[in-house]
Amino acid sequence: MPLPKAELHLHIEGTLEPELAFALAARNGVELPYADTDELRKAYDFADLQSFLNLYYELMAVLRTERDFEDLANAYLARAAAQGVRHAEIFFDPQAHIARGVAMGTVVEGLWRALGSSEEHHGVSTRLILCFLRDESAESALRTLEAAKPYLDRITAVGLDSAEVGHPPAKFREVYEAAAALGLRRVAHAGEEGPPEYITEALDVLGIERVDHGLRCMEDPALVERLVRDRIPLTLCPLSNVRLRTVDTLADHPLPTMLDAGLLCTINSDDPAYFGGYAGDNFDAVRSTLGLSEDRLRELARNSFVASFLEDDEERRARYLAEVEAYEF
Ligand code: HPA
Ligand SMILES: [Zn+2]
Image: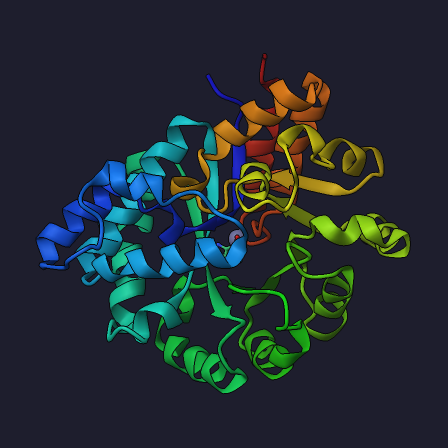
């Protein structure tokens, strides 16, 4: 039995495996510029975040109907469950779909068809996090939040993703204020490729409660001290960092140093179809390559539930945490 864990940094569009991409392309009559899944897989050789994002947005063309989003989410939930994920807080990128003529309602209702029955079918509880694309305008983000208003009972938080450098968090102050006023929780990608100042800005200006990635906080000791003191969780994605060349090799990953510093780190898969592994694969990789002890692995699993947005269901959180403590390696 795998270690029980929560996944807090997972882009549902990044779970689109090549086989499903081709199946949905055939179902929807969409032409993909790759001959087959092998040729597509060969394109998964990324130089940086942008080179990944180009393919990530290109393949989304196959996602058109509610059923497509339902199938995508069910495929992820089944894989995640098999790797010990008990709770998943799932990002989606509505602007990338609305721009292609796919309505907010199609995306949310389609995802919900899978998420709404996920406990029953997969044994995984879920939350949805609507992400704004930081390389789009602040006005577009505000329009997106407006379009999400009929679906707020299904959305727990807002996030910020896509190309980071050159798009500092402060651009989205207004939409984050509006989201908070609607009762939504707040997270943001910061310090993946961007500088530590973006992390500080996301905390101060956007009021985020959790930092997605946050790897580059290690360049600013005062920021590390603040993150430790305020128990701000970081959602790290080790295999993603290797594939997008944020770190040279997994052996160079700062995770052990970050844990030693007292940071509240969690381990996640980001875009598992593209980066070579789901949540359990990320745990296995850091365990074998970084030599993490069983105590450290248990700490990472515990952190994932502590950092999750389960404030509306503390009984469940307590149950998950008890599973972590009882786990035998
Ligand atoms: O790793 C990521 N970083 C930023 N934006 C993203 N959108 C999907 N995955 C990512
Ligand atoms: Zn991400």
